[in-house]
Image 1 (cartoon, rainbow, N blue to C red):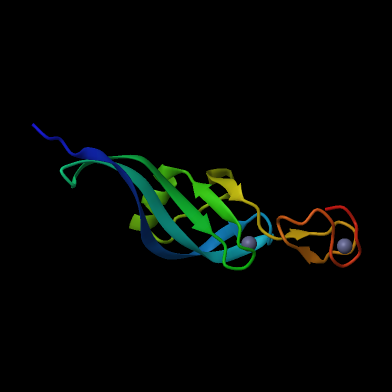
Image 2: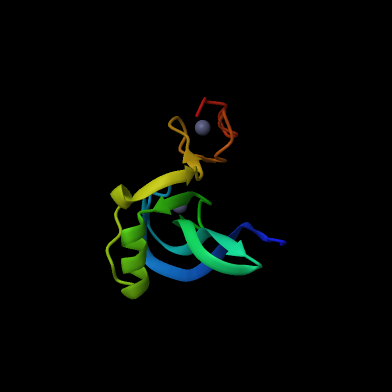
Length: 119
Ligand SMILES: [Zn+2]
Ligand SMILES: [Zn+2]
């Protein structure tokens, strides 16, 4: 007997949604929603999915948020669903605004490129 089974991961584009708040931009944006999940397969036939997660990405500051699954499913059904920052967890930081001069700095910068202030 020869068994072939294992797990894989997939990503699905759910489209763009309006009016999503961004912590780093401090305003609401059109954001890109993608669904990520892992699946278990046997003989290359997907049997079930697990670890489903939804991610929002801000095109402006490149921040990535994990969105609460219930809200994400609701958003896919009704694009006008109100999404608040409380429904989102920051996965990747977007541009930060320098507290000293207000310049935009990259999320991996430690010092402001404009004034050298620590971000
Ligand atoms: Zn943003
Ligand atoms: Zn600065």
